Image (cartoon, rainbow, N blue to C red; front, side):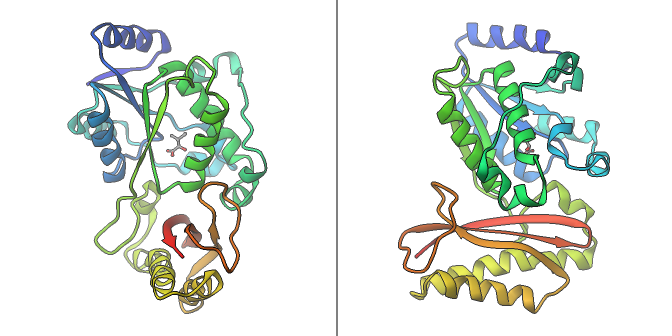
Length: 286
Ligand code: PAF
């Protein structure tokens, strides 16, 4: 695996790969690589002959400087993990490479970007879309792989791609979704889990438990409000998991669903455990 830090050097590497007939698959990350990221590299390898991973802790998607500073960074361990998973190139740009001379072509996530994760983290999704569009512009991949755990992020990237289907990078780009990888306990893998203590890990199971309860409720023929009620009970009996939101949304529009809905719904949940904000989601059929 080659580690490349500049856009120009990456351009040469990508041109060589394309010249030898290879499709480019891209896995953007912010580092703190875990098994969830490595599963995305596996998917990317099945999709193409040349896999580019990136690590860039994007300052624009953090709403506080302290959250940005606290974000885990471990270049050596991340590089070793991505290499052993079979990535061909690791792109590790500086802020100046991504936003030269401070020039930022800001993307807007629109009203959905202000809901749920966006309500707690103002402008997070604008910053996320801004960097994803910039990385797509630089890499111009054939395939990009994102994890399903960040459901709202994935929804917004998919929508941006639909809007960009006539752009240089948008016309050929195929988005592939990687399933959420979980601990055997059910806890969804996240870079933030490393900040949880052993007892907080137990409390954090409230998120996946709530999703399970809602799923069982729907499977027994109950509707939206009963499923939400069952999931809520998990949080009322575990007050250490401070619930931020719990909602059932239409996966195609991210609009909240009401009783009477039939079809596939996405349950999304966020809670704070200790000082760690966690999210999870699950598709549930009503
Ligand atoms: O999911 C992430 O790690 C980030 O939001 C992403 C997509 C790499 C953009 O910075």
